Image (cartoon, rainbow, N blue to C red):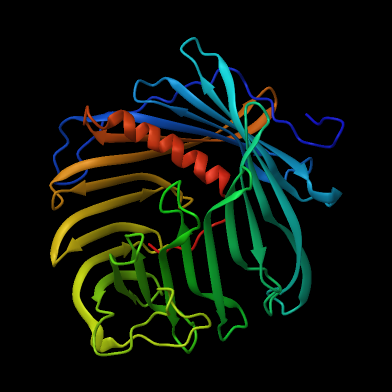
Length: 413
């Protein structure tokens, strides 16, 4: 239904039936003893605009290892500046008590800016379009007090008109407000006129008493100079101590098959203290603008390798992870006819133990005349009585963090 302000409000059915979950079946050579269900998330999506164009999640329900409903996320959408473009501008988080009652614990508000751009269609015609991109996120407690927020800074448009963020800064409110984290990115132009990320830096507080954020990790990427301008290798730098004395570098190389899919991602120890110039500035981070290249003479031993296998549609169906040349674990993936992930199983201890499994089921349903796309994600894990509940708590915390931060960070497989 729509209120007087033009905001779409989703009314969902009070009772949400749980899908039955089959017991695990051994899908590989690993042991399956003591595998148990430990959490589930049910996500409901529906069209949030009158024209039925924006199919978006409107509610997520998280269940603990006893199958009890623990947390509900509800999402609300508004028409941005009456343009017919709908975006999520509010999310509410409810905790469920033992009697099934809901209590609002926090909510998030999001602000957007319009991004106009042009693109070329299949017939070569230049067309105009626009999006709304996130510019600010805020977290409020149940008493309507602002406790956290972040601001996003964007670059000037690229040749194709798209915006790219150059900085995301997180703050904790106080007197004065305190910066608690920051991300920074730089870009280069590829042969197609698009921007590609060049460096990405992550800064965090060492502890709550720290005066300012310091570098925690960073990436730098190199690309092929000819079409299709794939990324070739990436240098990763991590700082583990406040004074920068405990840090390390890895060089990751990517190998592709004839279809362009990555089938190997290999990490090599990079000795930045070798005979070549150390690839960092006085502040301990990569130089910006970029003023150095990797010295391959400083590449040491191969540390970890991720080998992947794709099906004919480009879906990854198998990952094998090795450490020091020995298989440490592998993961299998299964998809439906729409290339939607339905099952993911991870085998550890050299591939001998089925450690955890993710099972996802989809269905379409009408409730009170409203169409819903329902996605049910069940997780199973090797039973560990000392760690099971903490994992469920981490799952809920991850969901909260993903709602609080809606900017997609750079990451590879």
